[in-house]
Image (cartoon, one colour):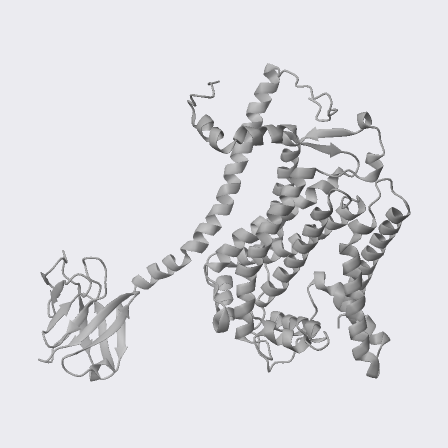
Amino acid sequence: MSELTNPATIVQEPETPGEQATRRAFLAAAGAAGLLYTAALAYPIYRYLASPEEMALSATAVTEVTLKDAQKLPLASVLMFKFGTAPAMLIHHADGRWIALTAVCTHLGCTVQYEPQADRIHCACHGGVYNAYTGANVSGPPPKPLKLFKTAVNDAGVEVSRA
Amino acid sequence: MTSKTTPSTVYDWVDERLGLSELAAFARHKTVPVHSQSFWYYWGGISLFLFLVQCFTGVLLLVYYRPGAEAYESVRQITFVMHFGWLIRSAHAWSANLMIFSILVHMFSVYFMKAYRKPREFGWLSGMVLLGIASVFGFSGYLLPMDELSYFATKVGLQIPMAIPFVGSGVANMLRGGPDVSEFTVQRFFALHVVVLPALFLPLLAFHLWLVQRHGNASPPSEEAKPANKRKSIPFMPNFLRKDLAMWLISLNILALLASVFPWALGRQADSLVPAPTGIHPEWYFMSPFEMLKLLGFVFSGKNAEAGEIAGILLFTLGIVLWVLIPFYDTGKPSGQRGRAAHYFGLLAVFALLATTVIGYWTIR
């Protein structure tokens, strides 16, 4: 089929079966090439956009955090810190016990707070309450307890590690 | 086929409301002339493709870029920390340069085909404004990484408005956000680059493309002179579109090759206390005007230097104004004396641009 046509006379020639076959082969090749291009473009873009996610994954691989000078934390007070990427809390109870737990509410993910007067952990979002020694969910909507960490106190600070 | 009163397919339903079949009929009847100069018809489409690449890669950079004081750090992160960030940044920078290049080719081909003549004056004018905005895109985008080169390029570039009598320093300070290039400059160049310029560019681009549909491709005067039955054309759908898309694919391949084999560099962080690096020079598309100003500075040296600078800017502005207004000078359909004069003016412009660019690169020290 000639591509050059006089504007006055555009003639459509009927296709022969042979032409139909080459056309099909061409379309298949073009489709395959298109898929390859799409993949070649999509892969770097996906990896680029997923970079922070991958960084977070390597950060959650953290098993131990050393909190410098945390041994000076006064009684009945709390220190918020990050364990990997997630918020966590170190509580120095009035009786001198050290407790570290995740600070992410198991209900819908708000950051919880330690209330020294009531000696409990409270989530302001939906009123969930946890035990400040064990992390057990006491009342309100939370379905699961907060996870406890192991703590080791020394002269330089407090070491918090996965239980 | 269904009757008009009972649309039975989704296509019919949509067509009845949006008139798709009118568009399809328009596309079927659209033709593109074929002649020895047809190659130049692709450059508008290539420019459009590269602009789309800019939009796409620009949004991807926006995901991690932080303007202001953290600008350099965020670009360093994009380039060296994020997966393939170097590639996306490199594609954005290369595509910007290729886009300016293809717009220039497009402009000169339109000029020498005399495609600015009636009824296409608005196409020419809107194209000139688009080129103007594209160069501001280039200038503002160049600062955003806030490395040494971009810092000094912006510092020097903003000296040009300084030469405008009376209001010059006010204009320059307004653009800079203070007396010196700082994080405030990056912040406002960023606003310009990603909000203001696209808001101006996109509607104007739509207008430009609509005009192309309205008037079709212009044929060069040598083709116009032929009798109608001697002129050839091909249908736009699918013949020309297929070739257009093939050009887009070639452009994509060239861009991918350049961006990955020659990744765009990131210099040291800008520091106003560090002297300008040797061999610093403007981007190639700004080389010519810079060199012209420099040459005029030599001619009017000493105490006349300032007058020479103003004269240079005036001369340059005059040249651009004449260039933009060419459709109102060279109106004749049969190429007469004015047509020839316009042709020579075009050749002079090409020669001046190339010569000053070559001299500019020759004299880098």
